[in-house]
Image (cartoon, rainbow, N blue to C red; front, side, top):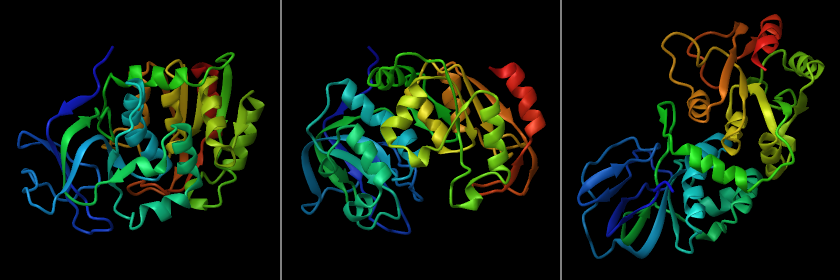
Length: 313
């Protein structure tokens, strides 16, 4: 059994004030900085000074950076909380650093149906989440392992986590070919220009064309768990592959964001590589160019996609 959780006695957490512009934050043990949350803009190497006003907890479980966005939630919070479930669960507070725009987490997250569905899937009561907005002294801190470093690396420990997640969603077979479509998204900037044509193409190739934003989270997970081939436009829906360590092929319709010269590593490919899943990119026939940040418009190259499918499956 892989060792994921380290006990720090005591542990210190430097808080990230809610909605603060200049944001620090970190986890400390023996006066050493172990981790800074992704949202931190300033790095402070020393633990917060002890004071009578510092929040004090008898124990707690640190699970990283909490961003109520689908892709970030799957990549950053989910693998760390699954470690807790693999150890039998926890009744202690689940300590997380909050995303910068969380001013009132309870109110804002209660309006996020997708994230609340995910918390229900994890059987994690919202009230158990403890947002580290101020400095905290934790007498006994259970420190989970950060296995996915966005745009940098994925630790091989993700294999055990993925198997654990998959075991919670038994399926009869794993032979489906699924295309996660974006054609029905209201935000034009979040989908390819020829998205409906792409839907028709995949359907003609024997894929099930699914619209994940119209599906309950549980159905999304089960569909991925039963797939041998998963395709979709670059983006967070494909991160659900973390639930299927037996996935054979992942086809990414890329805007050029991750395949142009000098691009940052694609977290999805890093994840696929560790899970021994083949990644195949389909490059666009046209894109809006520039840095190709999220929201760049592009046209999927259908003839190139046809050639890819002939050899990728």
